[in-house]
Amino acid sequence: MQSPETMSELFEKSLPAALQAGISVFDYWEMTWNEIRITLKAYEKSLILQQKQRAIMDHAFIGMLGRMLDGKKVNLYESYPKLFEEENKRQMAENAKQQLLNY
Image 1 (cartoon, helix red, strand yellow):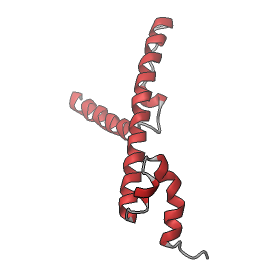
Image 2 (cartoon, helix red, strand yellow):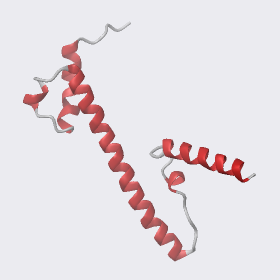
Image 3 (cartoon, helix red, strand yellow):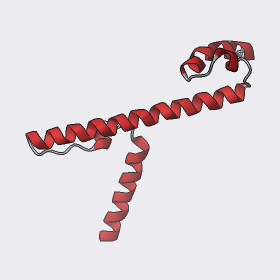
């Protein structure tokens, strides 16, 4: 069984990710572990948001091309299932609710 990592090992391992997130080396060593964790989580969320925005733009462009070529539509959630997993679940629940109301 491996022994748990020490805080200094965690700090050393997290430094590259922190630098990618835009934290300077000097600021990094002045931060608490919780501040680093919060900053890295916020950075991860911003990356996911950027990916979603790019996916939406790509999907709109592909949709225009598809309509021009053969009139076929492609669902955004089907095109990027992992990226829009939460939104897809919400949309499916809303569709099911609407079907019940229509029934």
